[in-house]
Length: 371
Image 1: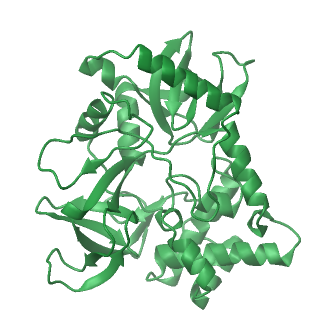
Image 2 (image 1 turned 120 degrees about the horizontal axis):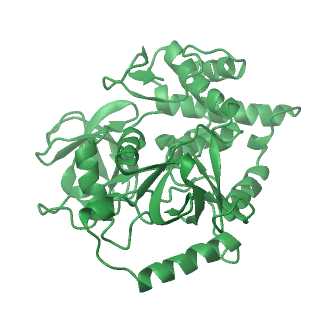
């Protein structure tokens, strides 16, 4: 999928170091108020809770892992003390798995499973003991084996590779323009709290963003930016997500024609949002990425869950895919590309990722690079 411009490891370190000094770390995401000319004043590097606009997830307050997280937060607040920069840096932790890893209540393989961490997830290191680390990743708090984690510089590098910048409108009716000028042609309008991928902060009061696969420009004084990393899932959240998915025909993968038709429509809607102005080969490639993830074992195993996974496809998370899906205004070429991907056709092999062309090695088709 598309990713925003990567931060350098050095810049990311400064962000993370600043973020770890605040209680907001890994609970609200890194937020920079673009109106201010001062140094970043409110920073919390990590994972924001991006919720599916179609099937919102809730929190089971009585679930074991939620109680574990609540108790850990109380304990942390009671004993919180200032850290040196070196100590602070070491608190970033990233997963080092190709698929998924379990997180447990206590540092033991026999302990109760409280959640999972997926490939490219990050978190805050709370404690280390006997080859295990206690981490916080979003709502998930628990113990994971050190052999499946990255620390220190390795974690910083991994975070810079997979994290992305999000730009969120802080007012209703924010114009996205073709050029960084107030009198430039308007590409579209962002409603309040609508977010898109950031390309670059130009430093002159304008930020370039990815708007429907085109480069647009918004005034920085009317937006906030966040650096986000994928988060883990608690057992409670997984159960709620799976229960919500069962209420739709999108989770069915055999037999019923209605289920197949709905999945095809959802995939076509995503392709239209992500690659609607790209050549046919590029549209098939986007569909293939989704299907490759469904088959890989490193991601959820349904089209619905892959598309709405936390921190993945921005048009799905900001509600654009849902609006296109519900409108029914999906072009035939996108249906054709979706059906081809469902049939196993691919123009990018087994690629699992894509983003705007930015110099990264990979298979370039149109405006996207796949790897």
